[in-house]
Length: 430
Image 1 (cartoon, rainbow, N blue to C red):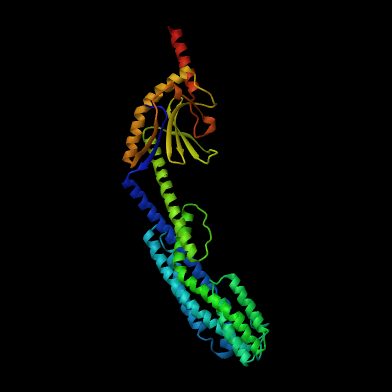
Image 2 (tube, rainbow, N blue to C red; image 1 turned 90 degrees about the vertical axis):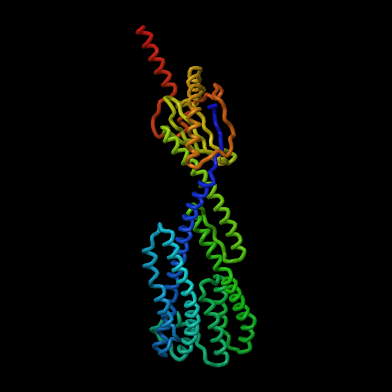
């Protein structure tokens, strides 16, 4: 019963549960780490996003003694963000609970920071308009040149209308989540509005261009607010899984459609990983069992057939001039074949065939012991595809030139020559 053997193995429910629990912990660590990375990046963006607004605030304080509360509110933001960096840097990256605690802290910080950002955006938009009014009388040449070319307005009905429209448009434009194309539309609207001096024309422009644009922006932000929390959670998990399992993460926009796609992708990745993890564990256990029984890996190779099936071969020492070839296929099959070793493609002669048949017989008991030891590790037989008896038909020579060899080994031909030489010496003595 020790000809070529092909089987498919699976895991006991208990071993599968153990592996699933290990994957769950690794997945939690990966997701928490990804959330920390993404939220920390967002905090850094928030920290750096108000450089121009701080200049406007400082100039308004110099001119008017009042910046609308911007400095005080920005101080609240700094006090909120400052403690995060030390927390992140001291978090134990191997402790899942520590990672999840830090992830929660930084996530809550981002939520609070985003609310302060909204307030700062509203204040800074009003501050820009207020500064325009102040620059109407005299432009301070020492101030940022970005305001030097701004067309001044008078506080006529037209000027007041422009100020209200500017506050709305500038506040929208400063929102980080608004798409670039919408921001470009806002910029165009602001530029066009500056050139309008007729009150009726401005009202028409507001009704036909500005109001619909603001409405579309608000609709986008409303939908983003509705979906972004679930989207961000799913996307962070998706990216974490891709990075952890060496996949390429795709970009997805924040939308209800993307949420459904991400759910499907996460389910697919988890199912694929579970299968790959099981097969990897089975291969690892077989390697351990073979090593425990005195077998040593002497060579390996990988190849893919035209039909797309991938195979990996491991050569294990068995006896002088012979080896056990274990083949792992991408569909989960494991085949074991015993063969002679040589460095060329050829068929065994009669003498070698007899040796190989004897080796097949001996390998019979070893194979039973292999499966017994696999069972102790939680690996059980799922399907016996073939279990063929020893036969000269299965005698083969394995060409080691096709393998990446770890060490030099004796070929079956060399063993034959040594036996022949020993036999001649005995005959001479007689």
